[in-house]
Length: 166
Image (cartoon, rainbow, N blue to C red; front, top):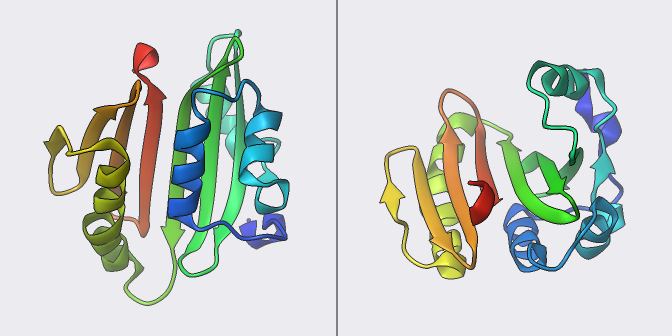
C-alpha cells in the first residue's frame, strides 16, 4: 500500500512532535484536543486502514480505552506514525515511529537515535536510566519514555507512557 496517499497537507518534524506531545500529555483529554495541539493539518487519521485494524484485532486494548493512529511527514527525514491511547479521558500511551528514507536509511536510523533522538529526550527528561546499543529509557514528569532503534529497519520509535500505566 502506498502510504503517501495519506500524507497530511502540513509537515511535522519528529522532535517537534515529541516536544508537543510531552507538553500536552498532562492536559489533553481527547484525541481531538491532541490533534488540535499538534495541528490538524499536520496529521491524517489512518486508524481505519486495514493494516492497522488487523493489528488492533490481533492485540486489542480493553474496551474502556480509545486508540487512534495518525500519519505525519517529517520533510527532512521521512514519514511517521503516531499511535495515541486514552483511558477514561486521560492520555496514557503514545508511540511515534519515524521511517527514515534514502540511501543507507538503516544506518541513518541508528545514527539518528544516538546523535539526535537520545540527546533531545535527555533535554526533556534528564539522563537516561538505562541505555543499550538500541534503546534508552527515561523517567520524569510522571512519564516513562523509551527511545529505540527498531533493529533491521530504517526506523526509530519513541514511547511516552503515563507512569501509572507503564
